[in-house]
Figure 1 (tube, helix red, strand yellow):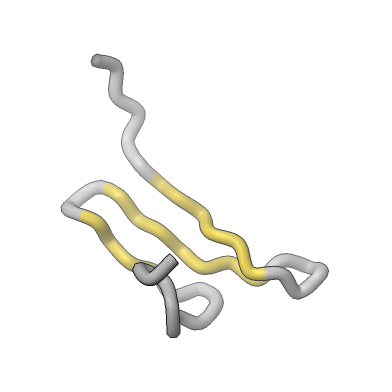
Figure 2 (cartoon, one colour):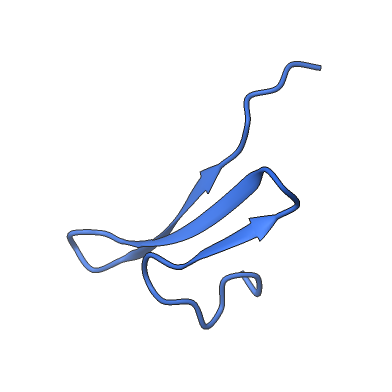
Length: 42
């Protein structure tokens, strides 16, 4: 969680060039993380 500590809702952090983590405020006022990463098959 240290990666997103101090971030406000809708702020994002990038890991490398292709992974995006966004702080999301839900309707019930909980903070969640949205993780967007490319689909890869190894």
